[in-house]
Length: 133
Image 1 (tube, rainbow, N blue to C red):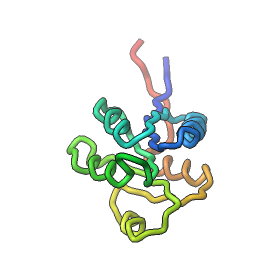
Image 2: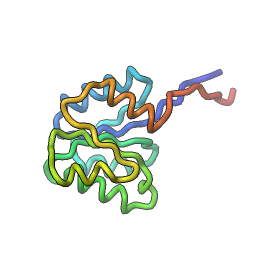
Image 3: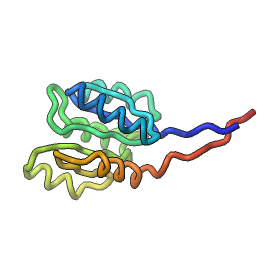
């Protein structure tokens, strides 16, 4: 008996329409999207483990994308987790993020095909796995 291993991608954005749209598209690509509306919610999800990639907006209230990334990198369990930052901003911080290891910057507007390619590059394709009978 086989099942598909669906890599879990944490999608973080304070706009629920963005979270839903990205989640739907990622699910169609064979990934398992896990939604979070704030950076704080994302940290709660990360405490449970099992996330293989984080896609986050940069500008969010309370805990923004930069704060989330800093906390991800400070935690030894999540320090190497790949992060994709989606932003429309053009700032010195964005230019600095472009050179950060295990981090990919995607500028708005973007095509989902480009984002999907990045996920595929970072995680590899979804793949069949054998389950014990």
